[in-house]
Image 1 (cartoon, one colour):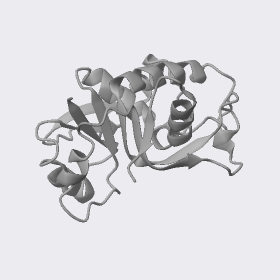
Image 2 (cartoon, rainbow, N blue to C red; image 1 turned 90 degrees about the vertical axis):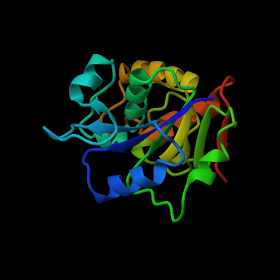
Image 3 (tube, helix red, strand yellow; image 1 turned 30 degrees about the vertical axis):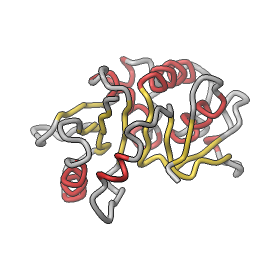
Length: 197
């Protein structure tokens, strides 16, 4: 199974450099950065996948005002489109800190074929705007800054997010990444979801 990891960010600084250095052992040659509105002229020492409002519109997704913060799954869809030959896709944000070499952590999941992996997956019981327009799905949550999805799960989620983008979900109630992805995965009879713990 081939796995790739994308660093989700809008800048390149110390945190991103630290994360890249930590990931090199676990993903030699299979690391990219997925940039939201990459600053002009910025180059980095790895593959770059750019995402901006034009990309969002061109891919049939809703560009709500805070999509770059709220819709981390968009970054996954861009990574999948740019690198379609992988079986599994990780996404990590620069505020994730590994206190030691994470190679063993990622190796634990290298043979696992689960479609969706996350941390602290559980029903979302609070009444918040992001749970109010799910079309009858039971809301689930997970900690989204470090997650993994199979290619087939991302293809399914992408089509679902495109369809969801055409609904009348309001700007405030448009589901965020963790609730949209894990609510759909847990409702699926096809995809298997599991927790890191």
